[in-house]
Length: 286
Ligand code: PAF
Image 1 (cartoon, rainbow, N blue to C red):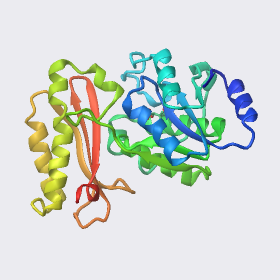
Image 2: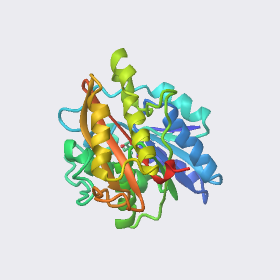
Image 3: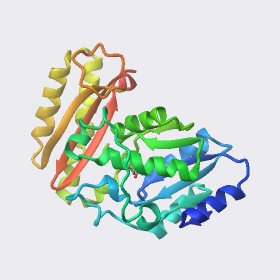
């Protein structure tokens, strides 16, 4: 596996690969099974392609009071995991390599980003769009994998590809969970033992409400949100940021459960740690 630290090394490696195509798996490192499943999915869905993982904690997607400085960094362990799971190369640049000190152009997304996570993280999705567009330009992939856990990010990045005409197939990766249902996230490491014990309430409530919708027990979006709010709100260490049922493409709140493609989304604080999760309704109707 090639470890590439500069844009020049990356460009040279791409040139040396000739006509072979690439699938990109962008990450911020601190890799866990959620990430390695994305590398495995890349190999499964695009078997002819080289898998290129990127490891970069992107400063432009963190707000001033967020965890950029304390975000876990463990490059050596991450490189071992990428190699073990079959990445052909890892691009792990420094911040100076990716941004000029006086960088003045960022991509702005104006329709999908202001709600949900964007409401409490202003500028976050502009930072994500900017770094992902730069990684697309540098790595020139034909496909890229993004996890469904960050559902709003996935929808925003599909829009990025559509609106800026990147010839890249976006492949969603299913959320990987701990045994008790908690979605895997690098931020789970911040939870205290008590918070960790209570955090599975998020997925438990989302799946219960999705089931009750599919069984006709819950009949309206308002009733679904009320039911989620009651269960999660009753959890002593949980503080709800948002609970919503949205249309999977527009991310707008739906007013009827007749919507063909609804998605339940949650963002909940445990202490200072903000956890997100989501489930699709049709996926749960067996
Ligand atoms: O999902 C993430 O880890 C990041 O937002 C991404 C897509 C790697 C961009 O920095």
